[in-house]
Image (cartoon, rainbow, N blue to C red; front, side, top):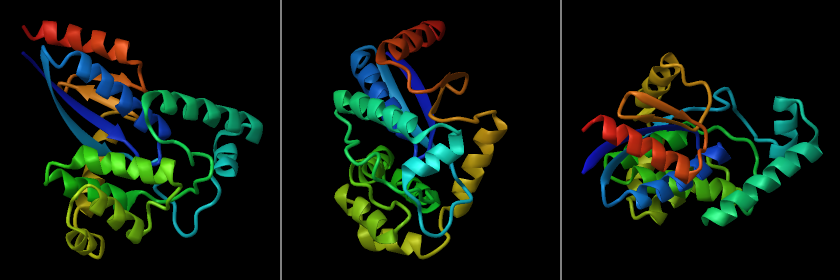
Length: 215
């Protein structure tokens, strides 16, 4: 059995991060008989300066990337189809608003201490891309917590304090220093960087090659 450590650097506001994890899941399932995977999530903020009321996502993306709204809508339509084929809910992808994800990252760290890091991340993806919920709103965050069977009261205590804030900042700084400038980024066995939402077959081949190296 080959042991594979995967550190995923991602943001809750990144659709390709949700797609990338769904593809990773398929790759891990294909190799389940011969490889054992340990997945850890790490924080990255696409828009760390965001504050106040969000704005509709399409105009915001047009301004950020300098494309037209028609081009951005077509790009989002393509992502929605990819997600649908993977069984990932992107039904409100184009109806969401920009938002700050720092508190959501704090809850991912907290959930990780209860072995529910991936479940928390997926609940947040579902809230943002599937429901167009504001994942900076504490009520939305607490609802996500309850949906995965964790204690809403404990989550409120975390959100009302600055718990895990330094953990998230240190996490972000670590991967920025390591040269991660775009997400998703998958660091495998603390040695190999796989950038972007690669297809499952590509990931399977990479994991097989890495596993063979460690024999």
